Image (cartoon, rainbow, N blue to C red):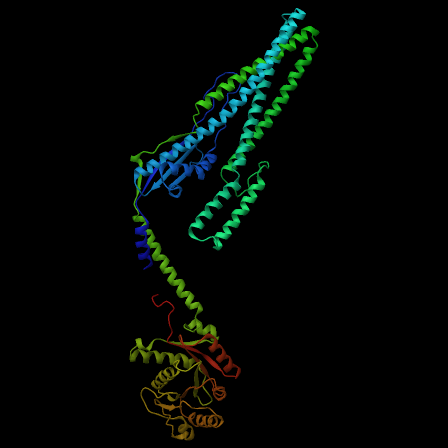
Length: 610
C-alpha cells in the first residue's frame, strides 16, 4: 500500500526533465598583448578553477541571472550543476528544466555568458588599476630624466667634457645592464605589491563571516514566510544572525587571517593566491637586494676614476637607468591599457545547443519510488511487529516460557482446532510417552503428577484429559482429578472418592474421572484423605494419577502441591504474563514443590507467514 501511495504521489511530483550541457575552458592570457621585447610582459593574475566555481555559486551572480531570465533563483540553483573535470582546465555545466528544452538551453547559455562577462570585468578592473599605477610611475620617471639631462648639460658646459674613456663606457654599460635588471625587479616588486593589496581588499570583502551572515538572513526570511515573529524557530534564527553580525563587525579592519579548516569558497581561494604572491614578493625582494649589491660594487669601481670623469659617468649612468625604467614602464603601461580596453576574460564559454539536450523520463523514478515504498512499508511493518512484541510481556513462545520459568520445556500443544480427532490422539500419545520418560515412578510403580498454571482457563483441563486418554491407550490404570467434567465419560465427585477410596475402580485401560468443584479447598482433612486414598490406589498395577490443581494462589493448594512427587507448570500462549508467572513459580518453589518441567498450550508463531 505504501508503494502504491508513493507511486501515485510520484506521478504528480516527477515530470519529464530536459538537461542542457555546456563547458567553460580556461584560456591563458600570457603575452597576449606584448608591447616590448624587454623584460617580462604584463599579465593579469590567473583565476583558478576553484575560485571561479566559488564565484559561479555566489548568490549575487544567481540573482542577476534570475533578473535576466525571469526564473526564480531557487529554480536556477536547484537545476544547475557545476562539475570541474579533474586535472584539466574544463568546467562542465548542466541545467535541468521541466518546462522545455528551449528553456534549459536559454538559461544555461545566459549563465555561461554571465560568467564570462564577470571574468572580463574582473580582468579589466585589475588592468585598469595597474594602468593607473604605471602612468604615475612614468610621469615620475620622466621628471627625473629631464632633471638628469639638464644636470648633464650643465656639467658639460662647465667642465668642457663631452666623452669619457672606454673604461668608463664599459663600466657604464655594465652598470646600465644591472640597473635595467634592478628596475625590472623593482617594477615586478611594486606590481606584486599592488596585486597583494587588491587581493587583501577582495579577501576582506569576501569574508566567510559575510557569507554566513547572508545565509542566516536568507534562512530567517524563509522562516518568516512560514512562521510568526514569536515562533521559537524565528527567535533562535534572529539570535544566530545577531551573533554572526557582531562577529563580522569585530573582524572589519583587521588583517586577513587564514580561513578555518572547515571553511571553503572564494575566501579560501583568495587566501591561497595571497600566499603565493607574498612568496613571489619575498623572492623578488631578495633579487632587488642582490642587484643593489652588484650595482654598488660597480659604483665603487667608478669612484676610482678621475673625479670629473667619475662625475660625468655617474650622471650618464643615472640617465641610462632612467631611460631603461621609462622604456619598461611605458611598455608595461601599454600592455595594461590593451588589457583594460580589450579584456579577453579568464575563461571561454562553449554554448549549449538545442539538439544536444537530453530528455529524462520520470518512469524509472516512479518505479524506484514505488519499490522504495514497498521496501519501506515492509520494514516498517516488521519494525512495528518487533516493537509490539518487545513491549508485550505475555508469554507467547516456547522460548519465552523457558526464559521466564527457567524450567526445561517438556512439550507444546498445537492449535487443536486445526487437528482432527486422530491427529489429536496421536499428538497426546507421543506427548505422554515423552512426559512419562521424565516422571519417576513411586515405591509401588505409580506415576503421580500435578498440573498447575498461573491463572484459570489456560488449558490445564484439556491437557489432563488428553494425556489421561493417551495413558489408558497403553493399558494403564488412570485416575484423573479435573476442575470440569470430561468431554466423554462419567465423573464422580472428588469428595465422595476421597471418603470412599475403595469405590474408585482403577482398572487397567480404564480412566476414573474425579470432579473437584469450584469451591474446593485442599484443607488439612482433605489432604489427609488424599494421602490415604493414594495409598490404596497405588496397589493397582501401572497406576497413573494426574491432578489439576485449583486456586493455585491459596496456601492449602501449596501445601497439597508440595506433597506431590512431580509438578508440571502449564502456560497458555498469549495468556500468561511474565511478571505473574515469575511470582507464582517463585512461590511454589519457595514452598519446596518439585517441578519436572513446563509445557506450553497453543503456541503462537511470531511471524505465522514464515
